Image 1: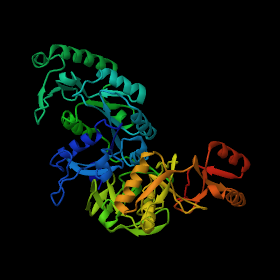
Image 2: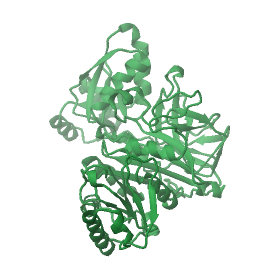
Image 3: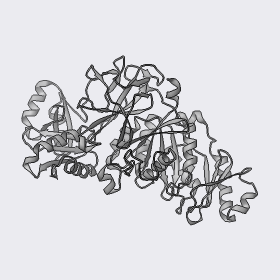
Length: 523
């Protein structure tokens, strides 16, 4: 069992939108021999469909709105790759995905440098001390100076850089990449399918003067001398602690530098790491199975109205059909048909090990952050909640589709990206989200997956607060503010506050009530 666990590499690819995340994901899958060509999976029926952006709205909009899990073998290891949304309006999905991985690969557009969404995502990695690898992408376009890029990463993201490769030229004059890993030169040729690689005797090898343009070769040698003198050599122990980040350069769209990145990443990336629970620290190699739910997805197969809970296996070995404890409720449940994923394509498996991400059928039992355990009551910590920042009312266009709308709102809200509120004095439901683009996704999915045509109108809500505290005070507050009161999907009382001034006034007038940003349930 321990040998199998040590083979696992579970990581997320994160970036600012348009840095090339989907492209590099598909190149990884191509090297893993699970797709015939970038962009298409080889399905059982020989159909073609996009790998990570599998939802219809993703294909139409050209953006990722939901994390995808992609599992494949590579060089004796089992890769569990989580492809995350880059757009800030879907960042809560990315943040939760980062709790389920052991390391992260951050993509940076070499022409633009560090961008805002990358800063936010890196803050989550830093908080968890996640080991981070950096890939400077799009060297086939005019790029910033590589030393300046790494300096920006160190200054803005707080990552200590250790260059593993360095480019020779960029844009139209991009000629290749030098690898410090094995003193080799990788020649860039956008017309060739395979990268030509030649071993050299260091950066001053005279043969390189014959192969490369003198101007760009001199720039490269100056940069190489500078980074070797100013930046730390790669230290695996520091990388695993999150204190040092290896940096690679290449062009994913041209498949250049990707295989070298993947080979090196698999060699150095951590196997499954320990996980903190409220009760104790759980080691990956412990014999008993434990895991937690970090994502729920409805309608991966719309024909069957399926609902999948994504579980990160934290320790031990999971066997199909095993009975485990659902720690929040104390119920014993049997996990009959666990699956692994290639985006929405599921394969039923007989066993899984720590580090794997499995899907289990969810009859409506599971919540995000739920812990499953073979033998003891645990609750894993560190799975974040998000307070909604934007609110809309949902109006049904066809009154005969009310059942479909109700089912759709319930199931989509249980995925975790949307909060559903039922106002006490109104039949019109209210949705709360972190980013406004979520409303477009919800409307599209309600109509596409549930056949419930609707319109969304902005609701006069500034913030949502869950009421906790003295029972009589809460009852009085509810009576006085019934027009702004609602219940969430769990029946908990929520104050939908119309403005910031009123929020301050209520906190002053009702000191026995705590106005909480989140509702937390005891484990």
